[in-house]
Length: 564
Image 1 (cartoon, rainbow, N blue to C red):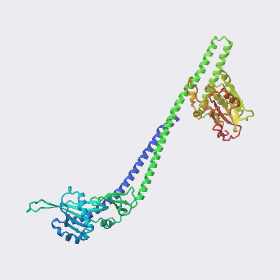
Image 2: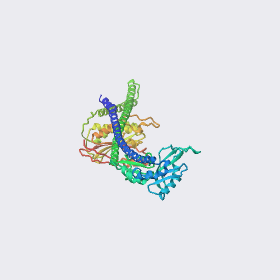
Image 3: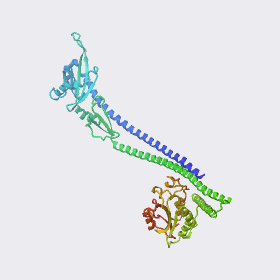
Image 4: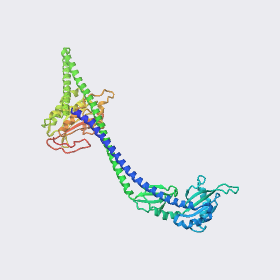
């Protein structure tokens, strides 16, 4: 029931919490961005409105002067043009420098200038107007009395002119009575517009903004330099100085931009962290699900392997028992052989059942050890004697080497025997081709180390860490090659690890080449008697009541071993 609740919390509540966090983060970020966008949009709209207002004011100011010129420049009274305009020019048309009237052939019929006379710049302008400007004007598309402007740079100088086409009815007393078309041109002084008009119009009311005007090449014509930022806007003048742009930036644009960037960065970090939490949560769920799936597969394999392990000795015991019961075995040697097989298989069956029961107690957390001062060497020797007959029957020499003078240790003798039996059984099962299994008991780095060394194919480095986990079996045990895979429960080494750690030590495995070997083994390798690298399974037990120092030699020695 408790496991079902845990699974419910893992697979239902955790995804729900992660989903809620994701939804909350999404809507928080979205709402914050919307509020920030609205705030930016309001600032931009206000700045844009200010820029449009300033551009429109200048346009209207120039157009108002053009309307005055339009009323004065009457093609029927060309001789009166200077007299009608010049007296009020400074007051009513302060930016207009000269007024010209041309006929359809672009011949100047009338010319009035505030500078007086028609020499110098005025004469140069007249030639420029006739030779180039008239060709750039859209006269064919212009309707009668329609006001238009030409703003263009000629010979590196910017010019602004206003122009109309006025129709005058023809004289009905002559043969050619067609209406006559006249071109009225007002030449605006751009220098005066920049120095006087812009300075007056753009600085009338103090505003929390900065304004400048740039030409078509981006050069500043009027005003201070502005930093181009998020809140800086630029608009073109609608009809007059359409080649130029007026730029407006709030006075606190740098602060606003920095605030927006900081806020955006903060929100981005929050969203990234939220996404990271969500991804980690999903990964945790997937890993948990995959772990549960693997554990389920391993448990199923464990049940199948244990069933097979139980079935084989039971079948042998029953078969040879029935043969003895039937009385068909007449030879005493055969009878003794069958009895030995029954005893051996019974011992194997008992060891397997003992392993399963101990493992079940460990899984339930009810495994208890009865520690007492005892000899590790004696416990190892007794465990080796249990498997000696089976080893000899399989053609394997089982030798035990106990270092003399070993101190006693606080051990559970039965548990130590069970661990050694599992290590020897593991060597007999998986060290195919080995002819010698050596069990050594020595003192190393202040601890008593029990090693079971074989001459089999060894354990791949990638399996050495996981091979002591429950239900996990090495790749050499699962792959078949030319022979069927070896059956096993996958709990023997897990029990060895648990027993070693319960005694304050640890269990590990390396190759026989890496472990300490004696000269006889080295000579045997030289003769080619050893197949593969072999495996050396070891477990350490603290000696006596000593605290074993944390030591490790090439990743194989005891580590963090303390008295239980």
